[in-house]
Image 1: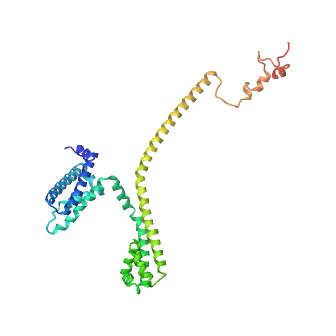
Image 2: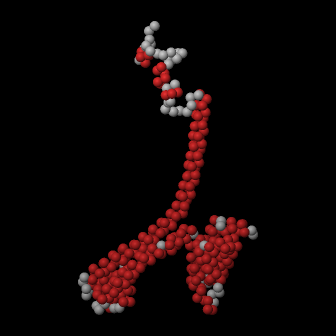
Image 3: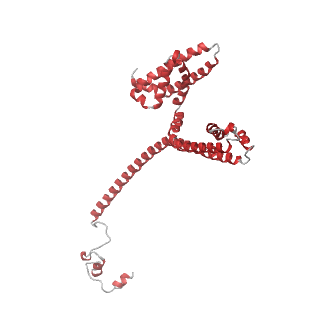
Length: 312
């Protein structure tokens, strides 16, 4: 097949949907095979068929995209999963049978929305690192304080640093923390202040900070594609507005040229509010020369100016 046809094939929607369906069916078969009933041999045969399908898929993508295939980290993940599936799970490689479950994670690569979420999760790691570091510092300091306060009376929970750290982690998850608090309150009635303060600071505040960082990063990733689309739309609208302004500017220039040509034909010259007194066309010259034959207007000029016609 020609490469352009193979490229259109692997990039088509129905091909992606077919691969997604095969991945889901393979995941169902992997779960069904754990029961080990009489259908197990047939399930193993079906699994080999699915591995062959995945190999064909990888071959088509490599042929269509070539070097471009390895530019996407998700393609690397798919390639490694299929490569691990080809290793015989016998002898020293028997432990690799556990890695067959990685084929289930190919659902993430087949669904764009899932890829977006995982990508946002990885991008939020730097921001989460600071908050998680602060959380670990709080847990470690609280474990030392709890060991010094309650280690002698409740050694099963706070006997040493290791036990105290594990207990602090249980309190962080708010799992079975009443059992710990009740054991401490028998000898330390005011111990509830320590537990309430620790749980509020870690479980309610710091963990919510981690969640906030993840949500902010995901929102930024979801809006990134929309922002690119908005920028493209604004660019198109800007070009349309600029083209319209150019048309209007050309029309204004054409109208201005027509007006100048008309003023030149009438002999009036360009429009101006200033007049030259020496040209004989201003209002002062009109006061000396009359309307007919240039005769001066002396008597009756005031009457004409007042709107009355002179008599006789």
